[in-house]
Picture 1 (cartoon, rainbow, N blue to C red):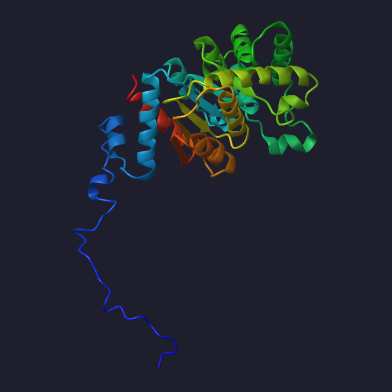
Picture 2: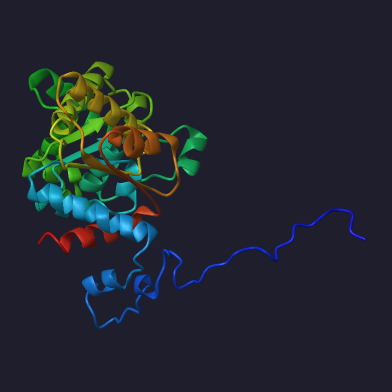
Length: 316
């Protein structure tokens, strides 16, 4: 005899699956892709569900922003450059699809090293053992001395200053520089330094006043772009877990404080992991009360080429 009483299921009521509301049908399933077809056919072969639907919706929002001359602001971390995505960002800048680029100063370092010397991303584990991690002289000299000189002799910001310097020096790998491409295209490019976080801050040429001043100018440049997001702009955060989400939230606050009705725009975060600040400061908080926020988890070297190709299928 069982000790515990079991409920009787004999009187449970059922319904027909034909009348039941269902979320998935074969019409939404993936289609088998034929290699003889083009990328648009591949896109159509993707299952019409979950992240795919979100990605398609984001692309449509970017197309809308481009059509309505609204900002498409792309915020990046250093990993975007380290995994080789600079050509895709540059292409979208040149085509007028990306209207502002913001980056942390680690991204600027990788951009400079790639443009000048065709190599970046040192082996930290090896170089930190003898105290030479981050001590590449040429990198620090170029960036720090440029910032020091131009902070006193111009009204340029960090991004403009370095982009113009790379062009002036005719960097051997200039075509891979986001900073230079933005400067040439007249697209605002901003660099946001957190002093003490980057290798150039530990070298003798480091000037805190110049670095702070140039980064502060860029914060104000970013604010100027953010104020125009109202009614259809887009903000993408790619691979920055702390710096750019924090900077963007403050820039958004500044615009609203100054009376701009910065609302009704789309945001999206792309990263390999879920992080608190991008989720809150990019996806959730900025879009409350109007707008849409998306969160995509995946490797940048897969997700961003896919996003770029989908955008270009609609904006030629």
